[in-house]
Image (tube, rainbow, N blue to C red; front, side, top):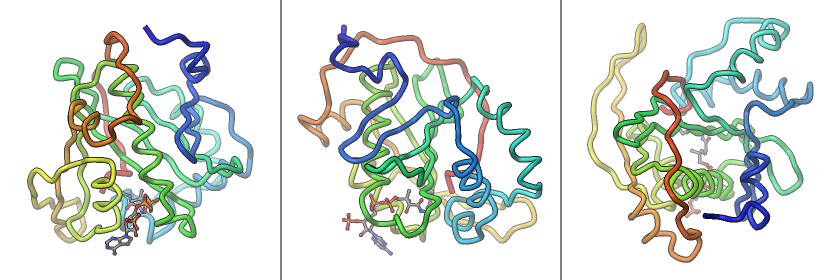
Length: 216
Ligand SMILES: CC(C)(COP(=O)(O)OP(=O)(O)OC[C@H]1O[C@@H](n2cnc3c(N)ncnc32)[C@H](O)[C@@H]1OP(=O)(O)O)[C@@H](O)C(=O)NCCC(=O)NCCS
């Protein structure tokens, strides 16, 4: 069993990567941080790559609805903070399958100047380490557009492999070709070698649940 005194994040829920800190979604947010989340949900370029739907509500409405989003128990979401504590993105798992110990990963760096600087892959590696070694997940998969080469490179850097492609017809939109990528716990351990801490006994997987964007 991992000693929480050596891994303080197991007490607080905060996860630390090489450069990023992942803070649970149910933590408290400053006004500036909420404005960032709101802005990403209305940014065409971010939405184009992440596959999200634009948010049609005012900031005041978003702020009022946010606590409900934070309380959702069918997903595990974190915000991504840089070395200086700046909030630049969000990632999490959805469609959690308790029986198969599998879930769908979604990730977005909403602050575009931070793209391609290694924050995304560090954040994904940090979350996967937690899911595979502190929880009992066996596989994590994701969907990304076939032309999203930056995302595919970031996922490959963590050890995800390409599995299949499928054509989707999002409501009211042109069709999109999506690539499915997957990684197992063993593959993660082999690929990331010494950076993976010793496994802890499996904990129960949170219960089955819904979907969101961030996975396009
Ligand atoms: C996808 C995303 C999370 C990745 O995070 P990131 O911090 O940008 O990724 P990283 O810097 O860790 O890795 C990106 C890699 O892609 C490379 N890259 C960038 N543009 C590329 C391109 N057009 N073709 C191939 N590789 C590219 C980068 O050079 C880097 O590789 P390197 O470290 O070997 O040089 C982030 O870019 C993002 O949020 N994009 C918009 C939303 C999105 O696409 N979400 C994913 C939906 S599945």
